[in-house]
Length: 282
Image (cartoon, rainbow, N blue to C red; front, top):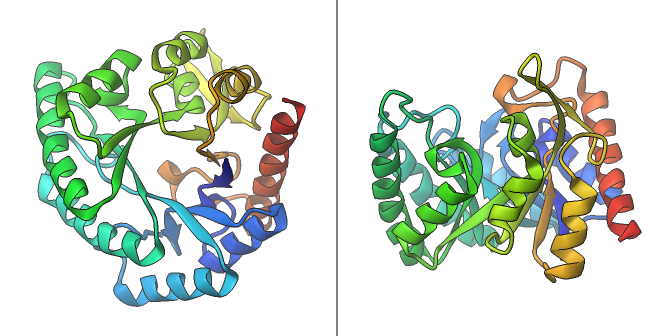
């Protein structure tokens, strides 16, 4: 089992991110932003990637996944799919360089007025993405987040079945379920045994207000300890468990934190240690 995290929530630059993981005793990270730019996009220059690669190699730090922007909350289902294709192609080259297998993806912001189109177009696009992934020898890890494919466990399983590719796997995020107002126990029941990668975040949902607030893991409504117990002790999960705290830095709200770099770093360390305490208790 590999314990890691989406490293830009510890700091803006790769060296700060590596420092946080070293302090936690972790020898791998999940790569997303370096100085505010996603490393799996065409907007991230080869020069910047070389800087990231050199820092990772110097620290002997591995990369479990690229946390891409493909199909994410910033891209609509009626937007330009060529952007996602270009990102996947350049990400695949960089993933091979770093020996990385997984790339996190989503199924675009849906057109709420036409969910049938959102479903069909997401499946069509994923079939094309999967063909590229097969040729490149990488795995698309589809996350339960923004998009038709992540709305329900049924949608996730339907996407996987319709695409029908060994290079499409599912990624289960414990906190997205809560922040979307879903029942974490029921969602987990529907997706249990069907995912290959885990993101750990937690939140409390205010049903009356219809709002949520992210918390340290184990302090929210995400049933983190119960779910991890079932996944590890009962199901024998031995893959990646990656924290995405959303405590001091939330990528939707910008690359950094208004609370400051020190708070980002310290809250990330605290979050990682809380996860380790939960795992030790199991």
